[in-house]
Length: 588
Ligand code: COA
Image 1 (cartoon, rainbow, N blue to C red):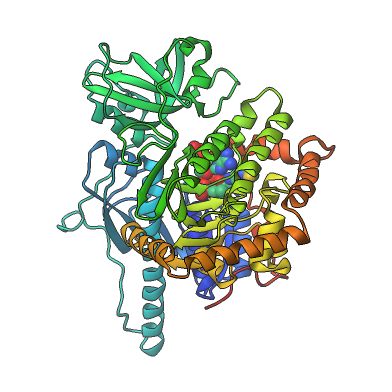
Image 2 (image 1 turned 180 degrees about the horizontal axis):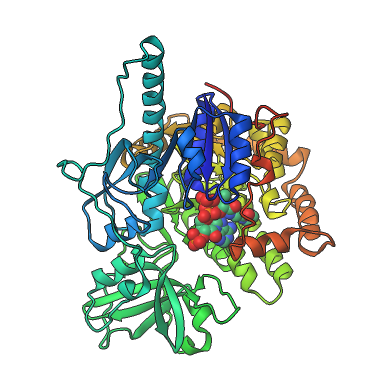
């Protein structure tokens, strides 16, 4: 089938659907909404069988939805309408929420329903629910839509008067239509009343607005948006809103019945000056200089009820190292803190060390926001890339354990390359990797010139890094980027992961396995030392950071400040002379 993805951005959900459809051998194109004429041109040349909108904020031009089947994926239960679906679901403490596939119509979110599915709600931010539950369900619905479309087309072809499938008109009198039209949530409704709101309400309010728009509040006299809320299980203050402590950039704030951690703040826009999300203590600056640092041990237990980016757990001979960095981005200090934890995990009496990544991303490489906020952006980039390289070097040089990357969530750029430093990579079905840097104007380091060709060969390595396309788990497994895919469901994934890593640790030939790994590493080192790969990569990175004509600083600025030209990126653009987007996936 020819499928056009009409979207506001090529975000994680769109990438997931794009990869899934390509793997099923559909011809898939992407077009950004915004320029109606460009959309019309693409539709008339590409002639899609169906237009899918996994992430669309704009209206579809009437002449398009009138003539073509357009299906919109809405992050809400059947009957839910409006732009703040998940926000309301979190604030209303719904126990279940859903995703609905609707046919585009004159009224927003009111078209016929093709398919819908629900999921249990989790105590998490809106962005986290969107990246996990909504994305999983949307991917499932897309499969259903394709099947229903085929069913309908086949039936119409064999008997034009019959159709076995008809989408359901939205009918609020039906018992299974539980949603309603809800307005856009505005700041006054999101506002925290620190003198009345319980810890749970504060958490809900911040989570319902995270990652966008954030809850507007005021700390130390600064109007700021709040993000990254975590419960604090032990501390309690005398006065609500009092800052009780700080830890790794986050602040611990008293509530009427406990305390919450707030990891990130963004200053409110002032006249023409925009700000970006940064660690809370960076934003508050001197005002929190005297607030005590509430430190943790190097390897805190994974079950501690507090804010802790790095945690660790052990089961038998297996150690699990978690690094739950906000947005998967790893600044210089975070890389060194993780390196310290990694080294501490290495001296534990275990045989296998599993890198678990974070709750929403495995890793997205160096921290572009931290770099943007620094005085000397080139120097800060240099320090950050060296910090992540030091961490990855330690993983590559691990001689006393088998290392495993548990890619439970998406990974991008240096974060995807970091997984390659491990001996095994076990991904969760449905994750999307972006193992490329070019979109950010970077050559990349993280020893990718050693690890990537080693895994996929020179030709594929060049294709992956040049095409700048997402790589789904299945496609990644097909080319040897990763070793195995475990189920998409988190519990089932964890079960399979535990089983596999425990088996590796218990293997009666474990010593041989380790010896083989060391032999390979020593042979590779003799052929070309790791230091040489690093030096070559960093020479290129120097040009990206300091070289004339480098696009990195402008691209990073646009990424961090979310400056979008609104146009379909060139590498995704439909060109009728090039019938297929160059693909790195292999059909199964
Ligand atoms: N540094 C800082 N922030 C980052 C980041 C990074 N390396 N990577 C992602 N983020 C942030 C985004 O700004 C966004 O922030 P917000 O939701 O708080 O506004 C959030 O993480 C999610 O990213 P988004 O781009 O919306 O997710 P996605 O799933 O659509 O795309 C990537 C994922 C990895 C393709 C995309 O985020 C990306 O290209 N990141 C940059 C990777 C990079 O170039 N790293 C540096 C080189 S090592």
